[in-house]
Image (tube, rainbow, N blue to C red):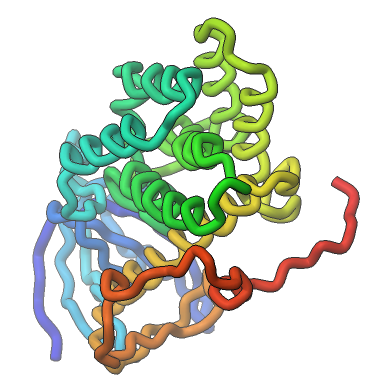
Amino acid sequence: MELSIKKDYMIFNLQTLQTKDNKPYLRLSLSDTDGAVINGIMFDSNKLRCKVEKGCVVNIDGVVQSYNGVTQLKVKDMTLIENADKSVFLPKSGKDMGAMVAELTSFLNKNVEADYFKSLANMFIDDKYQFDKFMRSPAAKTVHHAYVNGLLDHTLSMLKLSKLVADFYGKSVNRDLLFMGVLFHDVGKIHELDIDNGFDYTDDGRLLGHLLIGIDMVRDYVAKIDNFPKMAETLVLHLIASHHGYLEFGSPKRPKIREAFLLHYIDNIDAKMQTFESVFAKDNVAGGEWSSYDRLLERPLYNHDLKGSSATDTEVDSNSDPDSAFTSKIDFTPKDD
């Protein structure tokens, strides 16, 4: 069944490709004013009467159809809309930003104990320019939490998860240090990604990346705090530098302290769990159905409809054997950095 549509969209991503007959066509990712994203395709793109590129707002004449079980928009024609307000087309989570900010600040005020770490967190929150960008920024361009407020959402989720993990492992983990690592691990993304241009990369993002940008930001804050312990600064910076986990994934250093290992895996867990949600939403996958092949995870994903207890119905016994709850296999073979 096909549904004819004539509607305004922002081009979120665009690829110019060729058919087997060497005819040009476009693959598009399109966002509407509700922030909903749909994949689009346009054949015979050489017939376009206007030049379009990523970040353009266009009026599209086409049909919504199902192709190989995936909903897509087949574009017949598109017209460029000049001077459009791009902000209304950005993907959104539907979550209340004010409520998330209140929860994040409450968490830090309640759980961070060391005065110098409190000062570091408050200096960031009180920095209106930086924190405003943090509240609005996505956590990624396309992979996970790729929507307005996504970085805030991702950070808050990780803070709550990190507290559960820190409580489980007890005194062997410095909770304050882990919380600071979570708060600042992706902070550089506020200058790596351009929220006003379809989440494209900035020049700083392309040339430096969010790890180096974030390290510079934290150093600037620490320099303004009297008697901030040098080792505490070094360890927070190590958490930022190593949170991707591996050199081949962009970390200049691999994790070398407990909190850095935990940060890496907590980040990975939260990113992967949200990827499930975004893939299921993009493909309209109902319970008991499969998604299309996901290039990031390199597999299709199954949305089972098995009914059972929720996470709030279970508790972790902090006195139990950690190996019974955490079974990830880690390679401890010494390697050069």
